[in-house]
Amino acid sequence: MINHITAAELRLLLEQNPPFLLDVREPHEHEAFHIGGLLIPLAEVLHRAAEIPRDQPVIVYCRKGIRSQIAIQKLEEKYGFNNLINLRGGVEGLGG
Image (cartoon, rainbow, N blue to C red; front, side, top):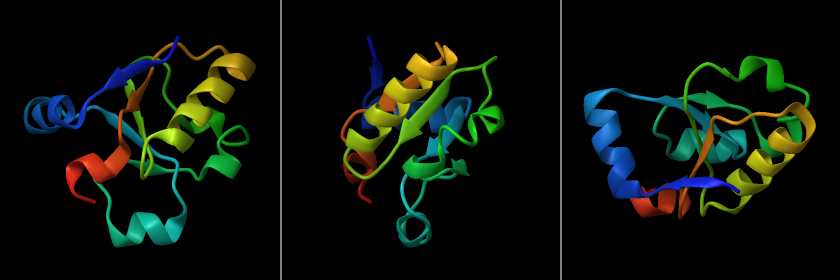
């Protein structure tokens, strides 16, 4: 079961206590628009899982929220992550 956060909820978090952000888009997408965080493209996410914290909530995002769901599913299945939250609708919901 994947946990989700909306763009409005994330906006509030970014103003108060910024969470750890994981961008699973491609580098050119990240350069064009991003909300911060660590960039690990979806194709690399399993190989770079050690870079993702397990001791705090991690908001995973992409353009529309599909690649981030795939990344979360893969990380949960292969490495047992239980702290990943998908940005529903991706950065498009934030104006990106």
